[in-house]
Image 1 (tube, rainbow, N blue to C red):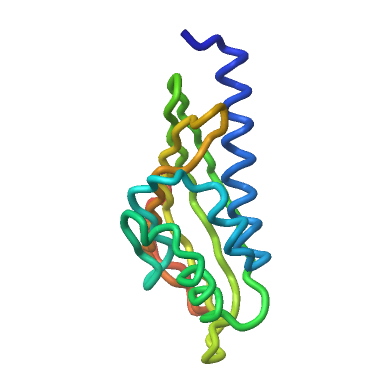
Image 2 (cartoon, rainbow, N blue to C red; image 1 turned 180 degrees about the vertical axis):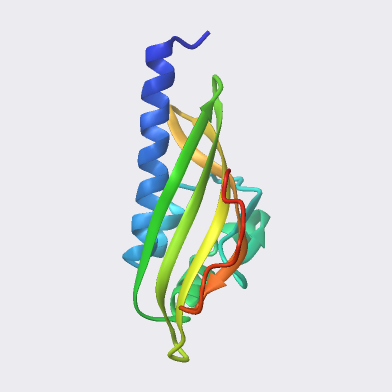
Amino acid sequence: MTTDSERKADEARIREVLEDRAAATTARDARRFLSHCAPDIVEFSLAPPLQYKGPQARDQRAVEAWYATWRGPIEVTLTQLEITVGDDVAFGHSINRMRGTKTDGFEVELWSRATVGLRRIDGTWKITHAHDSVPFLMDGSGLAALDLTP
């Protein structure tokens, strides 16, 4: 049985994993981004078209190709991060904000609701699935009405 202090330590470690994964996208570091994934990751989707299942979810070239669709910096911010921890499994829910310029020059602000499943593997938390639903884009004309509660 997990004690309260162990659960809090696990939550802190998981928060670090998810924040580093966001920072890896900002840095366009596909290797670092994928280093947080379990070897048997089931599903991974960021924003379309980066949606893969099974072994394809660890494809570094695909992540790099997705980064290449952005010109200039990509800013990623996690908000409303909530973590639920069991003994060896956990879930993270967050609202993610990504801003940048696509290669066609279109300024984009993308908001998504993310669900991430994690499993403890050899004492380290690894992502077993990650899914971002992309409810809307913001192009400066206004924000679509949407309940962002995870």
